[in-house]
Length: 339
Image (cartoon, rainbow, N blue to C red):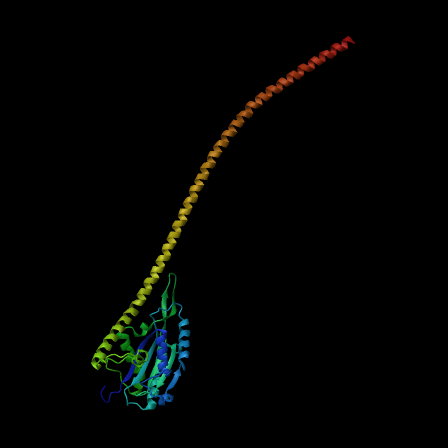
């Protein structure tokens, strides 16, 4: 950067994992040793949101609770903004006003409720700058079988996926925040690379080991290549995440449909068995009915035959009775004559 340049500086870094989020909060709040900070100037810093690391983590967890779906293990949980400007172009008062204006821009971009930490640093060897941490929650459209609705989701890619979105962000920031302070946007399409915000935390997390010290060029080449590979992997993963989620939803729906089809098949097989049992029962009843009809027919024939025999017997009894009466009558008359 040459003399006379008045650039506004905006950098962002994605935060994965609760441990990393805690490290960022500790750095912003100086809760752990910070080699590049002057402890005598700690009181000059201004904490605007999230006064302790515990409060930052608690606020983050509360925001995560508003998300109805399960959060992926590799999801971007938060995003850190670093806001600064070219050194020596603004007074300390204007630098502070510039940082506060930048914070308002971040709130408008992400929602005040998603801002979990914001601190203005004045204790480092640079000029006054802002660190702000937000939870990248957006309302996403969800389609189900019967309706379309919107629900909160973690989507850092919604804000930062691809060079076009990042370029538009830089342009919008320069227009809304940098321009009122006579600060310009960085050269659009420039090949220059900024050091990532993570350079402030790398020393904190790295293990102590006695290793050969690489040259500056070797270190820079390896670091840049590593960061580029990591960024590409992360971007690709976030780009395909919605496709994977959609395929997983379709797989779940196909599995549910397959289960329904299998349930219907089971029901049809059960009905077939019931129909077979009914058919066997009908056949058995038909056979029993045929037997009953045959028995009734034989009974009718027996009744008819038996009735004729009974009639003949009755007539025989009646004839015998009449003969007996006639004999008795004849005997009585004969006795009467004898008297």
